Image (cartoon, rainbow, N blue to C red; front, side):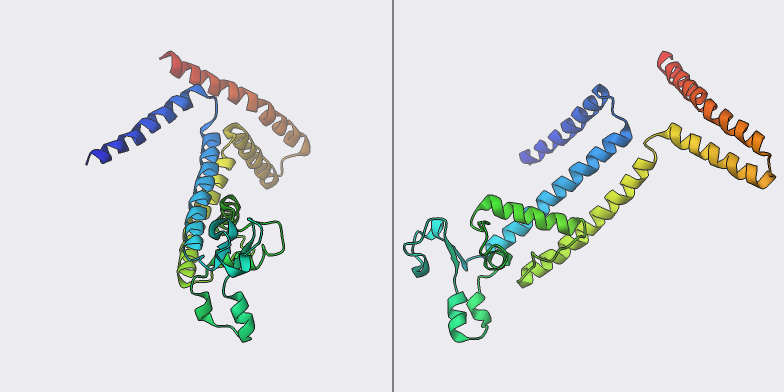
Length: 241
């Protein structure tokens, strides 16, 4: 029960955010865009951690010399950064594929034996695996999906499906909200464009002469600054109350 009291820190954090908003001159639209960026980063990190955890959970077939120190016959006398996938040589000797040889197989092992093989990529490096997992999570979250990092076990297929469903919801929310925020970044500009469009539509419908159309557009363009001044006066009146 006492640990639940730590949840009060969340309320404290919200108060800190409010104090920070009072000190900066960012608009709420800009703050919303920053929140969307933070949401993308946090969601990508969580997806990458879960994906990487599942990959390492069944990656026993990947033998890293820095962990086994030559205990595997194929790695005897090999450099410390060397690695090998167990079961691959036995399958080559058989001449056919045997699922039982891949009992401890995961996307990490598939990545090590596939795309990273013959390159400078080290699948035994945790930082490199995290980078690969983030790469996969961003592809999943943004629905790009290059298809080079794939699930290979039942659990990974389930996890990948759940991440795609969750990522599509998050991405749809961010895109929809961001479009709404961006369209309202400059209320004055939006109001000016609506007034100008309404005038142009009326001018065509009423067949107003060209000279009056030009004067009307000039008036609306100059009145834009007057409306901005009136909005500033309203804000000043609120502060003086």
